[in-house]
Length: 330
Length: 282
Image 1 (tube, rainbow over the protein chains, first blue to last red):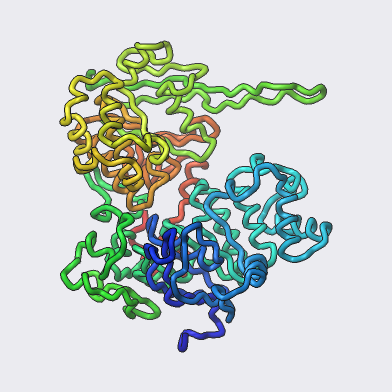
Image 2 (image 1 turned 135 degrees about the vertical axis):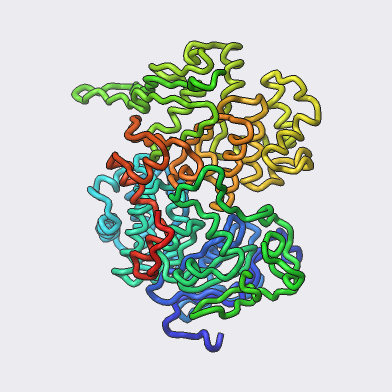
């Protein structure tokens, strides 16, 4: 962690390996030696297909891996603190005051049997040790902050009385309760309509601009990433295969997977009859254990014998732009 | 089926959800919800129509009424000279042979214990297709959705989301329908897989001349797929026409709002001053 140690870095992940298994000696590694960092006030996008390890990476920051998931090695350093070494009480304080998290499905993250107000107040009291009255006031101002009109009426409602976009705003309000310095947003707009998505994205941007909150934004949609992020990391098969400033990675992708992914993104362009948008050949990575070399090699247009031995180290290819492909997608 | 007339003709389709329950004194009667309001359109042979709109616009209700999965309150759906709305029992079953549906969630639409081959065969047998018991029947359908025949022996658990959706499409194709309705059939999939399934639908149309009604809230998915677009809002069609025309010269404010909300990577980067490139803008 030598040259990376930087005052400006809020979150640093070093050589993180995550695996799944019921027994510790029989674990199937899913995330392989991942390095990632987020500076204060920046928005980092994490892109990749289902099963690439993006959500696991996010969850490991909160130490919220699902059952059977283990961090096998590596470090997660948040604001100088070692997250993986925290005691239970430190962890609780860290989760409730330093980091906020929102997920894809705002309906399943809220308790359907309790009013919005009681859920928000409980979360705020736990996190900030507020009195009931102060927590209520804070809940009202948070709902205003996420552009919910008539907040006192909304506090009395049940989750099913709110639309999907409204529920995601409530989740965001709860996540922002303690003014966290990092917000983790895991596919926050995937389940929403396009117009609602635009509103939630503009809210997230405002959170960063007004409060300097760093955001780790997971999405499979390059439109959302280009709209929001300063930097982007592309994941495939449990590795970061490319990372850099969004304009570098999107306009000049160097890893063949990134190139194929960007080419397959549906756009509003209307192709000629008979034209087919390019797709990524071959089946998506299944659950086969990783052995060695580049995990994308079997689907890559440019693959060659040497791909079997590629170390998947990120190599510099431009200003702050790195790619794990030593052959540069040619 | 003549080449001139439409394969399917929908006219005045209306679905109303009536509010029932207790009416409290002094309270107004809760208003009925008009989910679909006099929707009419024709579908030509080999045509792909895209129905776009947001949650609650009624787009799914339209196709569910067309497929008679729910009962419409008013309107006609004419398929091959027969009004589907008046059919019952065996007549309806026979009509459904020509009109098949693929749903959003490939995880819940397949029986988790049934092998893929059996699931496809079952779809053929249910419609009394001759030869459905022959191994060739399953192999041909797997081939049409570009899955290797070895997949017949697998169970859904072994398949990715995109592969499961291919199986769902193979089942829909089993009775050799004239029309396939796809209700948000790619929404749950990764973007690159979405493009694969869109290409598959295009190939199926080009090869067999099947007509397709494709419901999606994602205009970028429809732009490459649909010959014509219908945009719905609050149960009504607010705009319809050739895809090119609707996307490039929308006449309705709502269509314009939908188009503006779609995050285009190039436009976003340009607006943020991160890209000087003006190309690739549609």
